[in-house]
Length: 369
Image 1 (cartoon, helix red, strand yellow):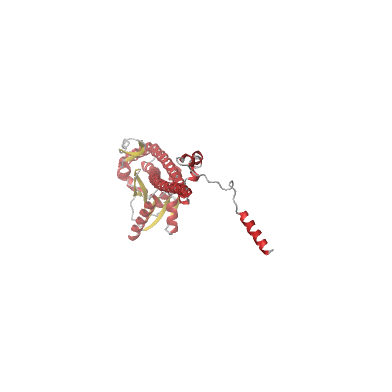
Image 2 (cartoon, one colour):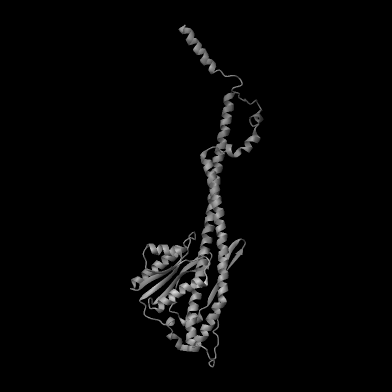
C-alpha cells in the first residue's frame, strides 16, 4: 500500500508540469522568412518610445534634455523682456532731455549775469571735508551677471579709501541687493530706497531732498554718487561723481549723451550720441527780475540735482537690464550646448539598446535552430 501511494504521488506531480501544445508556442522563422520575425513592425513603431529605450540611463537623459530645452525657452524670453525694458528706459531718458537742456541754458545765463556772486550760495560753497555720504545704486533683483557685485565692491573700496584718510562716511543705499549686503555687515546707513525698473521723478525727489537736507544741516560735507555708467549692451562701468557741493562751471559747460537701442539681423546693439552743451540764455543787463537772481539760482539747483539723480537711476536700470540680457543670452547658449551634448549621449544609449535587442533576437533564433 505504501508503494502504491508513492507511485500515485509521483504521477500527480508529473501531470502538474505537463505542458500542452497550446500552452507555450514558439515561432521559428523559416529560411528566407525574415519578414515573419518582423511581422509586427507597425506595432513596434507605435510603441517606439517605450520599447526602443529600455534602460533607466537613457530615460533619465531624455528627461534632462526636456528640462534643459524648457530652461532655454525661459532664458530666451527673459532676454526679450529685458530688451523691451531697455528700450523703455531709453525713451524715458529722451523724454527728460528737453527739461535738462532748458535748465542748463537758464542756469548758464544766470551764472554769466551774476558773475562771482553765485559762489556765495550754500550748495555751491566748498568746505573742509570731514564727513562724506556715499549714494550707491544697485539693483533689486539678481540674474544680471556681475552688475550688483561690481557696484557693491566699488562702494566698499571707496568707503575703505575714505576711512583710511580719516574721513567719516555713511551710506544712502538704493536697491535691495546693496541694502541687504551692507545691512548684514553693519555699515553706517543714513537712508535706504528701492530701485524700481521704472524710476520716476517722485522717487528721485525723495532722494534729492534727503541729500540736500543733510548737506545744508551740516550733517555731511560732501555727497558722492556711485552708479553704473551705461556704455553698451556688453559693457558697463562703475563710476563715481560728486553730487554736492555743485560746481557752477560743470553744470553750465558739461555736455550730455543719449543712447538708442537698435537691432540688425536679429542682434541687438546700442548707438550713442554726444550732445553739445546747451547755449546759455542771454539775459540783458537792463532786464529786471521779479525775484533776486540768486534766489532763482538757489531754486534751480535742487531741480538740477533731482534731474541728475533721475538720469543716473535710469542709466543704472539700463545697465542692469543690459547685463541681464547678456547673462540670459549666455544661459541660452549654454543650454543649447548642453542639450546638444545630452542628445548625443541619448543617441548613443539608444543605439546601444537597439543593438542589444537585435543581438538577443539573433541569439534566440540561432538557439532554436
